[in-house]
Length: 78
Picture 1 (cartoon, rainbow, N blue to C red):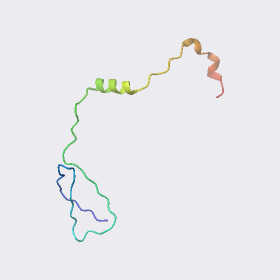
Picture 2: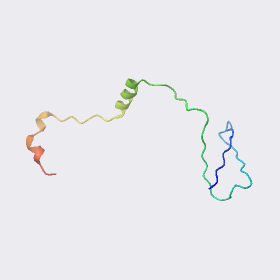
Picture 3: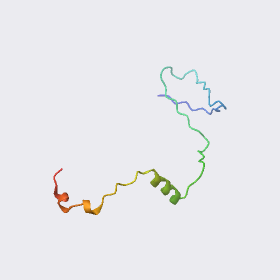
Picture 4: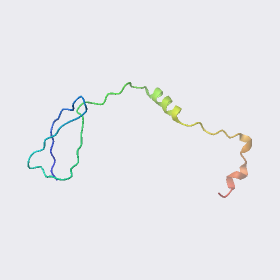
């Protein structure tokens, strides 16, 4: 396996061009693109706000009236 690292510029059209050295083997290869710019998020939420958003994504829990629960149901084979 041979690894080649090269700094490139990504164009405004989100394209890049890479020229490999002549001694680089031909055939199938894997390309990994890693940005040198950190990912910028739109906003930073407080933990409480993040938790509230997460809880809003969960479906509501089913409501079972206490009268519907019977002690003998604990011992039923399922």
